[in-house]
Image (cartoon, rainbow, N blue to C red; front, side, top):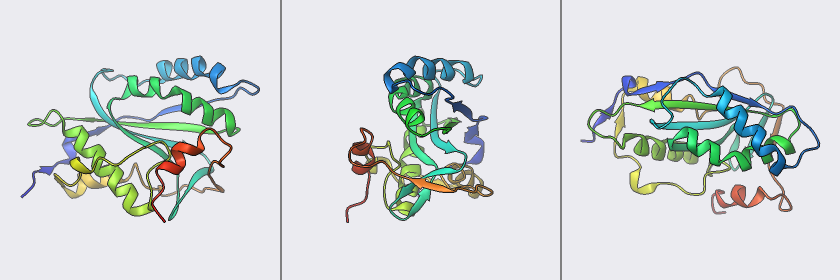
Length: 197
């Protein structure tokens, strides 16, 4: 029987919010601004601590996916600060392209006492759960981690704490579900994660 992950092993921090209020800049020129916003907004956690994190749109805009819509655009693991710093190109491209868009980054520290790589398995399961619900990957996820899926079971509170951050979310009132078109430089990652028809 697989080991069970407890809710005490998943510690979510307040989300990091990025709002880009500048117009007329290219995505390339906006990268330093996005990086500065990430630095200023980062929570009081050790930057190198292994984490899982979820990048979501905030506000009235969500993303059109195969079987519905969701504000989730990426599910990641590892050194969240360094990964997001390197992801600043696509974050800035999105924020420049969609006026008044906001991005919210939910970060969970994972305290696996007997497994220092527990966060990798949790990320794999979160991507799988998302795929099972929407029929495709989040926009900027390029692949599933099938070799790490379903190695653990989850206590009810633990699974609820995780799925809450990849669900649409209660109380959200989205007015738009958008997707990039083929002439958009962000279409390729969006299309790559789509489920086969």
